[in-house]
Image (cartoon, rainbow, N blue to C red; front, side, top):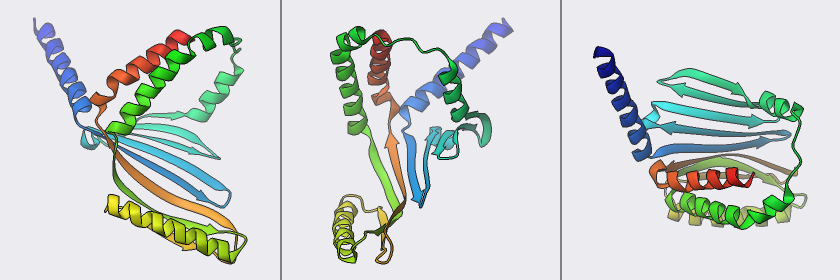
Length: 204
């Protein structure tokens, strides 16, 4: 009897956590970084106001996923090794006839998922620094002017945006360090996400 009660309590806690994770919007951060030959993309997300969080780092040197709960890393996976292991497996030949047959269904599912994501995702903050330089200093000045005008429009729409633009008149370059913070209520995209993966699975 005590074991059944304990299992019931654990089940109620798990259901409550799942419901809270779906109802409380998830915070997502995208940070692309490029300086010279070094390029990196960091995607981090937080659930339940930071109780659970994850991070994906993709760069020229590593691909890593980390999952943290209450500040403790419980999972760390090297995605680069996973990719190499997949390559070693024998790939099945692509069934193009089946792929074309399900193309419309996949398109509809992808369209529904993208519509749900764009409709329900809100931008909290946009900040970063961009260094631009073209071969012609005059063209550099014109490009920086256009970007300044665009950043002014972004500032009017999103007052918390902070974008610093640094022109480089003596060197051709395109470096950036931009961080975008997004908020997404998961319960609004769960059904489109399930439909998308179900249709993808059926098409394979």
